[in-house]
Image (tube, rainbow, N blue to C red; front, side, top):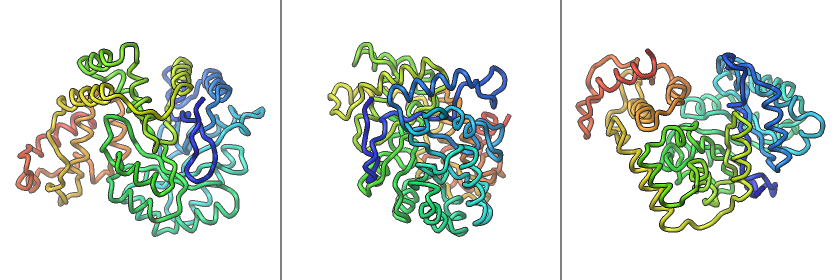
Length: 383
């Protein structure tokens, strides 16, 4: 297993992290973890050198407003000496915080659920403009200082789902140890993107890259022409290896976080991590992945450049983000696009809040039929 230094901590963390959002479940019971299968995966991963495990308060619940099964299951899986072999990461569910006291209550609950005296890496979960503003107002920075001082958490970080300027603002707002961003070769310039990755790394933060396979869509949803281009460039290299290698080639990426749901997935990912290293790609490899990505981009439904001229919408609809999710669905048959639609957009920001006023269309330099396309988004994700 290859290891990388985690920011300025001096800790050596495995290049592959184990994400516990997609643990195997009992058939037709999506919130009930198949414990025997999942424990076998986790113990295999630890025995092979993986030492970064990521979970969150709502994982394996039927609603993000409820505590899920992932945290207490992971505590069970890490019994018999395994806890001492790993770094444990979990997250404060910011959307459930309404007052300063909620932060302490939730952290204490998580410590109990994880059956641990301290959480190694603690993140503010899924920050965007609305949650960041709320958490600042409620005193989250003082909460982090207090949790660190009391030893309830060892290092503070955040996971992120918004645009680049806000990401830089958050990076600069606190002496974070690390951050977690959605990052893969398809999303190189999405949200924080490559520029945010470099910005955070230059500030000394470790960077955890989540969604390296985009929920599996960079494997199952990749167009055949893109597959052909990659296979011709490096015969025998799988789509999974292409995606991971692209990330591990970048020295700023500390951990590639993979949500594994089957023992075979774990074995494949661990084998790839064993041979991972920062290296310089050949021009052939770099061109191949850009060409493969270009094929995907040509399949987009809405030619939206996210210029923002359509904003602000009088009703609060986030028009570019709705179109981005629609394109995800059409370009990569991305099954997670619907989840992101409900998870990342507030009710006001969703396409269904459009009242068809047409103000946006007068401002759009691409002359996109915005109202019709927003209706399509509603049909895709809400019907």
